[in-house]
Image 1 (cartoon, rainbow, N blue to C red):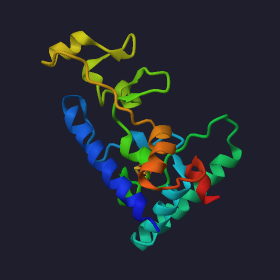
Image 2: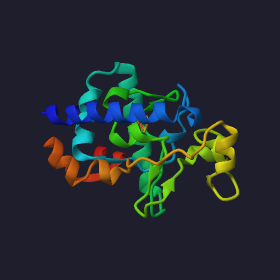
Image 3: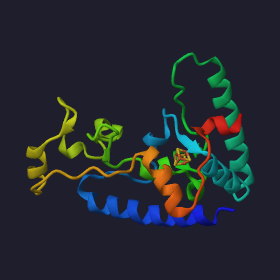
Image 4: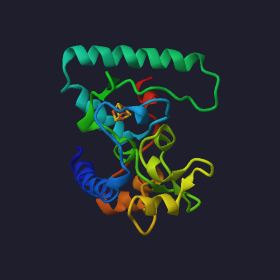
Length: 193
Ligand code: SF4
């Protein structure tokens, strides 16, 4: 059922890991850092949600129960939330570690890298402002990468942004290339309503 999707994940994992390596002087991700799993929308397509749910069968019973109770809490919080966008901590995050790591979605795999936004501008990950990725070359006044700071790090040119926005990675071209149907897309928590 997930054969082609898994081939795509293999391809994507290789690419993403190459990108992280290329930009390692500016990357400060470490185990236990979970800012990217908090206060977000987490777009998930149908196939990603189904794959993640298939992973639930493999996790420890106690963790499974904690996830279930987290999902229930987030859904209750959503009911009373009046904001346009409902931002929440991912219910799979337990003690700052992803409890479903192998089965996580595409957005979870690309967090933390420089990306190219729909308008063509380079987008710096939000954790930069928290002193994490790219913070060593970020001009805080303009929220853009500083050539001067890049030079101070010993490099001649600013790092490039990658074409890793979610809509592109789960778009028509990818579907055709890998013979996948991503299906409906919505916030992760909405797949558990
Ligand atoms: S599924 Fe895992 S990696 Fe993705 S947001 Fe949730 S805890 Fe983080």
